[in-house]
Image (tube, rainbow, N blue to C red; front, side, top):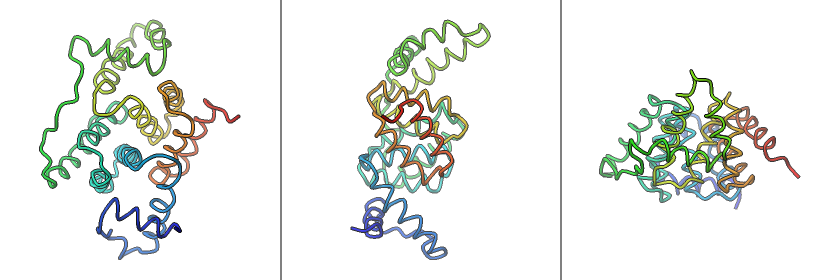
Length: 251
């Protein structure tokens, strides 16, 4: 099957018979887009369609390309992702892009869910409370990054310890401990989020190592970053690949 036929098959699987406006107004551009994204990138590597749509969602949230994000919420449902999985992927963005941008995406998800008669709110995935969110977050942080986290907290200047505490309690306690997505998936999505941000190469390198520590190998990371390419462009993709290659050199 050539890439044009692959593109048509994949597009129909994701979006049904919906025809984008640019098919009429900008057919050449739409053909380039569709044939590359849905005829090449979607077939590169071993990620399944659920993983690909989760990655697409978080990158579009990070980029705040909300019309395309909304379309991919429907596509995510079409490939079998649950409302819980979709919401959890969006929530996972909050520590890295902030609450306002995440809320923009949450509102778009809710519009799609309401249109499809998916009841809101969906079931809670919370697993921590006010008494244990820090300790459980710290335990998750150590599981991903190792005992260096405890040393980093201990060595933080007094006027910056609150930032380290927020990382443990908020980023890892409030979000990483939630059910709905497993730890390997959350860490892979986080790598895609920080790669899509641009200018966060220090965090990209840390999360490359974090992915290795939780069981995602180099090929999975390359597949994930490749899938980000049509949405983030070559500069950020190449920067992320450079980080991967620095942390995990080629043999």
